[in-house]
Image (cartoon, rainbow, N blue to C red; front, top):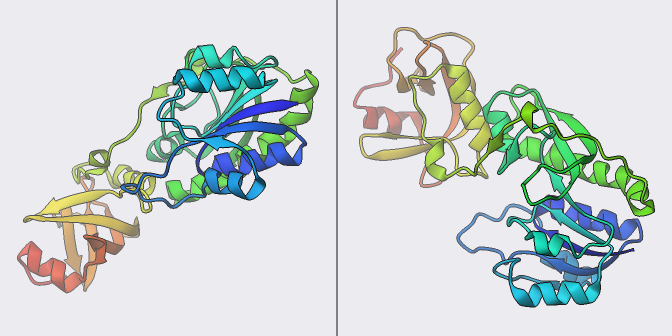
Length: 303
């Protein structure tokens, strides 16, 4: 079986390797150029292609006519998309004689759309996973081929959950591929009424509203903690990003919402009187000492 693969990120790397291990002929890989303005903390699909001797291209858009001509000449049995960042035009999907399939980072129909792992953590979910599904003109709406669930533990960050979802994606594809190649894979319903569509997130979405309950603020921190841009707050001309934090074991009802220094430790006090115990606070990527923060706050460390 011959496939054209659109892939990026860790999931792209692992799923591409699964195809090769299952004996699929990968005739072309379409991926992205690395952006020097972006923090690259994930593996490179292009590097895997160079190691494996696979042909690959990095077009600015999958709608480029030259790309369509090349894929049409390949006449692939399958088209796969593994964390490729652009919607693949319907005209390309039609070139796959046995179908086009995408790996999505949630348990569809939940969390369709962009950055599903971050949204699941932000909303305090206790479970997510990976779903292999048919690609249609509408994103994340096609029939489900297979799913694998993973737990989200109370203190997991989105980065940690993404690692679990990468393994889940690999397992899902490994298990589904034999039946898919044989033409006998199940098509399970993807009931869109049971889930919602989410858009992408911007760094500004990480701004902390300290009037919120502590659990909400903590979930925001977990959802965007480094290597993502991080949950941040501004105080007296300084912008601070939370690097590491936990929910504080005791409430602090006597302190106003916002950053505070207590017993030479940094806390983020929230609207319900509970707080985050901030183990690492950053300014311009450098750790901030409690004594330094206390000076910015305009008061000596309070008890």
